[in-house]
Length: 233
View 1: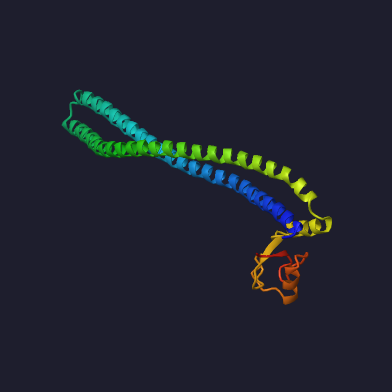
View 2: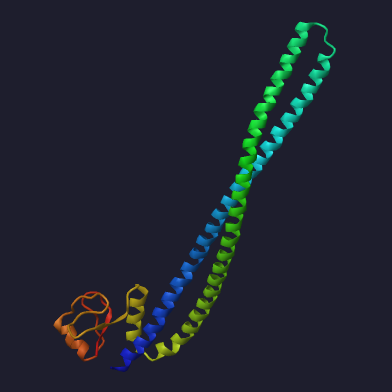
C-alpha cells in the first residue's frame, strides 16, 4: 500500500472519530433536556396530587365550619323557642330546628365521604412523592453522567484535533484538497474497493478502467460517489 493511502487512512480515522464525537456532543444536550422534561412532568403530577389533597382538606374544614355554624344557629333557635308562648309559633320554631338538623345530617354524610377521599388522596400523594424523589434522584444521576460524558467528549475532540496537523503534513497538497472537499460534503473521503470492483462507500460497481487504476494505487475516484478509492487487499 502506497504511503499516500496509509497517511490518508490515518487522517480519515481521526476525522471520522471527531465527526462521531461532535455528533454525540450535539445529542447530549437533547438527552439532558428530555430528562429535565421527564422530571418536570413527574413534578407536575406531584403538584397535582398535592393540590387535590389540599383541596379536599380545605373542603373538610369548610364543611366542619358549616356544621359548627348550624349548631350555633340551632342553640339560638332552641333558646328563642323557650320564650315563645303561642303553640303555632313554637311549632314553627321546632320546624326550623329540624330543618337545620337535616342540614347537619347531610353535611355529616358529606363529611364522611370527604374523610375517605382525604385518606385516599393523602396516600396517593405520599406514593407520588416517593416515586418523584426516586425519579428525581435517578434523573439527576443520569444528567451528571451525561454532563461528565460531554466534558470527556470535548477533551477527546481536542486531543484528536491536535493530531491532525502532523497527519496532514504527510499528505500531498492536491490529494489533501480532494480529501477535505469530500469530507466537507459529508461523504466518506476514502473507501475500499474490493476485488469484484464494489465501492465500499456507495456499494456500486466501478468501471474496469477505474479498477485498473486502483490496482496501480494511483489517486482515483469512484465513478459513482466520487470518493477516493484504494484496493482492498
